[in-house]
Amino acid sequence: MAEIEKYGPRDAAVNLVLRDVRILDPVRGIDRVCDLAVADGRFAERAAPGAREIDASGLAAAPGLRDVHVHFRDPGTPAAETNATGAAAAAAGGFTCVTPMPNTTPAGDSPEWIRSLLSLRLQTRIAPCACITAGRAGREPADLEALAAAGALAFTDDGSYVADAAVMEDAMERAARLGLPVMQHAVDPVLLGGGVVRDCRVAREHGLKTMPPEAETAAVERDIALCRKTGCALHIQHISCAGTVDLIRAAQREGLPVGGEASPHHLALCADDIPGDDANWKMAPPLGTAEDRAAVRAAVADGTLALFATDHAPHSAEAKSGGFARAANGIIGLETALAVTWEVMVLGCGMPAIDWAERWTCGPARLLGAEAPSLAPGAAADFVLFDPHADAEVRPETFFSKSRNTPFGGMRFAARPVMTVCGGRTTYESGDIR
Image (cartoon, rainbow, N blue to C red; front, side, top):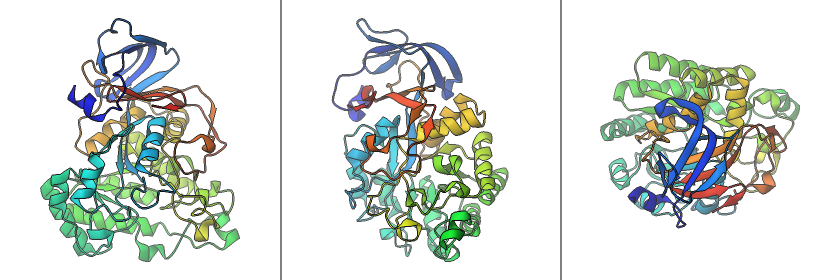
């Protein structure tokens, strides 16, 4: 029971049975309709006496979603998000494990940062990462060994590219010895040249500086070369370009430990969809072309990109004012991620539902060296119950996140989370956070 006690909120362990639910369990290769029982916070062969029964016909259950790329802005920018509000948003989105990025103020480059995350009691588990470089300044590696000893599972300077190749090589050599991955924000600032959007109608109409795809692909190419040299596992964050997909696919054919993530917005949207000078559509890297979007979708479908990640990036209304030229980069994503990826990949691209679940569960777990989650009897109950036929409108004013910066507001999607159970305890149900 230690796992349940450590991670769940302090209410009663769940006793329930979901009747006639569609189970999606990638670990066991199960996609079928049956009952799913939880007894005293663990999956069970049969329901406990007096267990709550839920008619789940038409609903689906998958292991709790995992997100290796979120920003909780804590410490630093509480007006945008805190650990508490970010965790609530995660629970509402069906997530039971998240990895907050260390681009906080101060930067998450110390063992104390890791220990502070691990001490939190939230609606979701925290799988911590830490900075690649001291202070995220890019000048020298952080104390990666001490960070790993404190519990860091990966290293990233997300929000900044480690531009100095010698520093990055040193860090990757040390990470390789620790057996931990490096996660890279692969956008070269020199090649970016101040670009805020890819070439599109809105860029031309408003005279906005554009990002050439080479700003991403050149950074990825350099780091693949360092992966080849050091043997360090390399994970490319928020991929937006077809050329990046090609580079990762070639590296994998070579046998290199290179992978990457697809964010819901880069899967669903492209630069030509941007309606105007609206910074709710501004993110880093920016939305790609329709061809880029198709390449990222294809890479998710064939497994080249083995996981989804939201890059949940909350900002206050003030920080997102001023249009593309002046506003901060990033959009929120935790409370729309399930709906958007189900719509795009399962309904739109015909991806098997069990593969969709795998990209949200087993893929992130593998990256961070965790056991792949399952709905098997005996395991602590972590799952999301969702309605794949909800036809729900995205209403940002109802979000649990403190921020509202999303391009998906007003759009309708088929799926929505109904219940989230983390560590054997209910964290979200039908609009309420526990």
